[in-house]
Image (cartoon, rainbow, N blue to C red; front, side):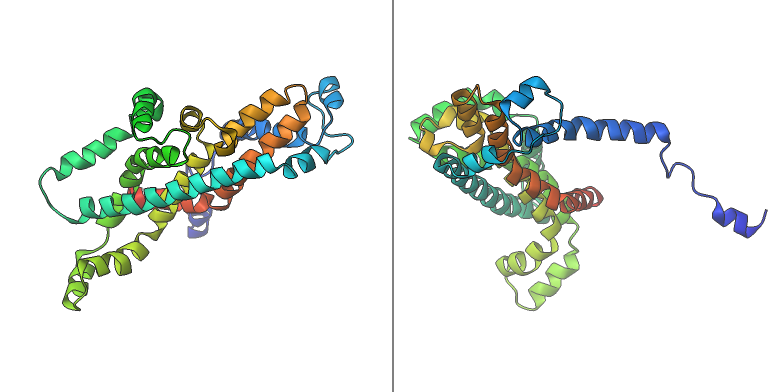
Length: 283
């Protein structure tokens, strides 16, 4: 057998067959179709939706989106969601990075137990703890306050952050830390000047996951927030749907604009997420 023939052969298992591509396209269609229906539905009229629910907009109507964009209620809820998402993300990243650094780089008693505790937090969803959590928030006087949403979101976001960041920080060679110590750099200086830049892929990953998770969170704001002035966009969608239950096209437009920031944010940084999770697995 010639060398040319050997080199021209493709390794087995690299390319998927027709069935693999069909299943992949099927899953993509299941995920994308509802989003497209909601977005396109905002460009239609109620009469057109009732007559032909699956058709494309004909004619294309922009009044539904313009009406939502001109609403002060929408922008107020948008601002609340942005404040909650940014504050939660900052808290999750900052605290998670510090905790992960201690677990990954230092030896102390109950270190394994602490890491196992954070790992166990992945199996403890917020929906299970929502009733006692509400009682704690009420005792702290944070009901109908954005802090009542931000603080619990930080707490429930830490397990995922720690699990992702610890492998990154463990992978940093000890020689770098020893060289920094010989140069007179303090542990705090080593953390900010060396650890943070080297673990940036993981930091970006957990930041994106925290932001998207906070933006889409519905259950906690539903329990904590009472006045519409403090509502986030997921709650705003519910209220808007109730108020305009007969105006399907307008409801679809409001829903599209509410989910658009998180969707765009996730799509833009998708490669960063994949790269960060891959680095965590390798570490």
